[in-house]
Figure 1 (cartoon, helix red, strand yellow):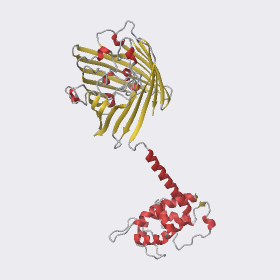
Figure 2 (cartoon, rainbow, N blue to C red):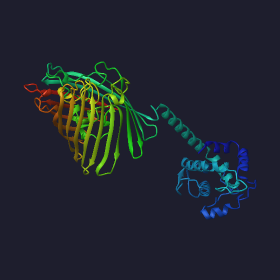
Figure 3 (cartoon, rainbow, N blue to C red):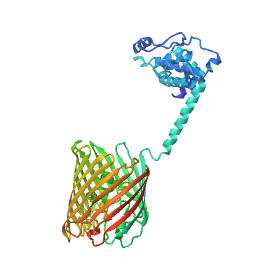
Figure 4 (cartoon, one colour):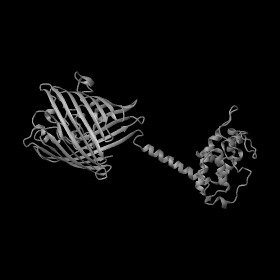
Length: 536
């Protein structure tokens, strides 16, 4: 209720009377039931019960009765308010029960809020009011009730004012009405237990702050700041390689903990799909299903330890600036078609020859997504890509390899590649899942010639294994390698993410590389990891 109405009743009955005359045309005849001859007809048609207490009735004058703590059915106040509520369509919430004076005042407050706009109506000569006009007799009853429950109405008004102030303060103190702030902090203790030129254990960090903004409730603008200081431990192996690279290593701002933007993208709906546009550092996993099951946290610190175990390396071919979307077909069988194109992050913004969106590094992806059963999903993926000499094949379009042997990633003076992949994810139960993939890349490398690159893997995961959200995982596979050269470089990874709370998890694990860079003869390596992940 606007408190202005009942306060004006208390302060100036004369002003209220004038308002009544101007707004409803009520004649100053206290015994008149209504100034609208159609009111009784409308009341009967609508089933409305007229007010049974008029101004001529005698109201109690003793202070003792008004001072009681309750109002009961049969009291004149109770009967009067029920009549007003029925006639003018307000909800008094009395429910024919004994109520406290404050509860009664709340009901009165509700009816005053309903009557205020009725009093403001001005009938025209051509139309009748849509609601019954307030009679002088009814107004007298309302005024009497308002006067007697002045203290309770004042308390209600004070509570509403206080609540309004608290809401205003809360709104003023919000970070933004359209932006959510999310964060992730990783402390990573890791080291090579064997197979390295040195076995020093290191402690590194990675921090991400994500601003997620929506302008209409259906779109998303992502702006992410990142920093870190941990280089790849695998760089210190006897045979330097991208194999075993961890998700928390090799951020764009390595070693100095300097802060910068490492992701800027926008997603918005078009017809029955969403379009994803990346201005900087977009990846295929942002818009395409990866079938990584519980291993894939999309470069976050709550899934697998390594870049390889997250999902098939085919999703790491290319990245940067571009666009992607999925076109839906149905709920089962062939579910959707995913398409996307990225220009490399080091060339997309440069207008020089051999660079830009279409003349430098790029990756064009197409993927068919299948829903084979309630438990089984699968995908068939194709990527056509080009890589300059400084950009490895499996590197999100950047200059540092994320997975695969050194000779597989090598792009020499320029490499064109066609990659074909198949992936699946099978959810056996709420606590058991399987996933797997196979990848072939047919690469044509300048100065080297054609090479067939292979990668495959199979994983078993146990989500919520302890009923608290913890995750155990085991993956066995081979990171991308050149077929027919050296030894197949197998990768075996096991980890257990123990979830202390919704905001903290600790993940110990081991990564075993049988033949780093496709070289055996005692070069196998074991990398130990203890990763702590804080999220907010």
